[in-house]
Amino acid sequence: MSQLSQLIEEAYTGLKSLVIGLGVTGKALCEPGVTVIYPKEEVDNLATFRGHVELIGKDDDPAVARCVACGACAKACPSNCISVLCPVPVKEGEADTGKLGPAPQKGSKTPAQFIVDYSLCSLCGQCARACPVDSLRFCHDAYTVAFDRKAFQFELVSRLRQQAEQALEGGEE
Amino acid sequence: MNMDMLLSLDYPLTRLVIGLLGIFAFVGLNGLILVWVERKVAGHCQYRPGPLHVGPHGLLQPLVDAVKLMGKQLVAPARCDRVLFWTAPLLAFAPVTICLLPLPYGPSLSPIPMNLGLVLILAFSGLGVLSLILAGWGSNNKYGLLGAARAVAQSVAYEVPLLLSVMAVALTAGSLDLYTISAQQGGWPWQWYGVKNPLAFFIFLICAVAETNRAPFDLPEAESELTAGFHTEYSGMGFGLFFLAEYANMIVVSGVAAALFLGGWQGPFLPGVWWFLVKIYCVLFFIIWLRWTYPRVRFDQLLNLSWKWLTPLALIDLALTVVVAGLGG
Image (cartoon, rainbow over all chains, first blue to last red):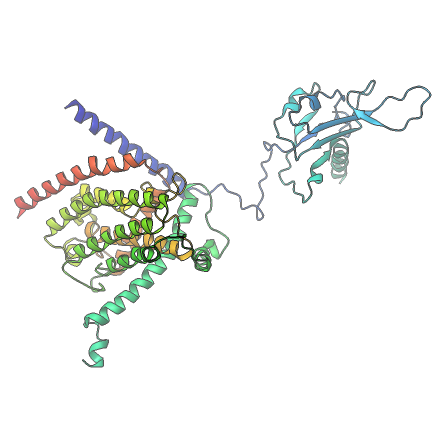
């Protein structure tokens, strides 16, 4: 007898779960969809979107990165897609050729070039974690498109400068 | 035999030809509509829009799909049994159209009214099993053959409780004529056999879903878990016919459900045909809704449900019906 009542109980809970399941999809059926029909509309809540990394400017001068060219990000990067380049110190008596070398370079506190190869990046965020001065963040650009792989090699120092200039122009308007 | 007689609807052959033409149009149109409804319901169940771009709200999408399907090359596997291989899809589709003939679409609209309509439908829907096994055997493909064996095991398993639940209604009505059974019920839900005998209706619905190979019982065509099923080797319209047969089968079982359990064409305000279509489409919608709610069952679960639950329940229901009918009569 106990076996029979157990069977009936099982059948009851099973049927109940089936009805609950129908309720879930039935509710979804009546609610509006959440898919965005991309070319016709675009999403604007990209605050949590993780694109490629970009540099953060100083508080007093947004065109200059907080970066201290220590090279910790490049070391932390598992896919080797970051290269931070600084001016190589000129020895006494030699002419300054503007040669760049991988960070850190003696005496250099700002990067001359900060190159990220987005085509290799796995967006793990190790670089941002490793940065001692919080100079890296993910950008919110979801619409990066190109035909050429080289177009995904971003130079972040000049990118930051451009962004600051654009922000300045936008502010003046 | 003169021309007037040939053109009269009372002449059986004329009636058959006109009925078949009507049924073909009905099945074709419904196939297109159902594909669209299926994809729309699927989309909305998952918070996405479904087909959207071809025609308003994607209405022309099934038409485009059909054209694409027809344009595809028909390929038969090497060393397959060609006759069986190409007979199978035709055999899957042909009996379904016959099953649609005795359905009472309205008080005065039934292509071929007959007093054994229910038996005709059950007999011809049994032919579908033959097409599955022919497709699997003729394909010269082990996966196809195993898929066919699976499909036949399922079809046979669910035919038993389906027959028993239908028999309960036939006993109550005292008739095998779908028209008579529909006419005995009233327009209001409490007069329907589905409400008077909910267990039989419940069993019938589950078996109908399983018989039409619809999810969660769509193991015969489980394309993602197993290497598809009996129709692995079919391309283009070969597959298309199986596909169309599935939808036509759905219409048949919904029509039978509407006639046996939901009062057929009867309803308060509208003319009969519309009520019948509304009821058919409610059942169809429910079957589609089920598909996008439940995950696919495992094969042992599928057979257990039929043999251990539905068959005994249907037997009990039938026995109770006999007792009640005996007491009442």
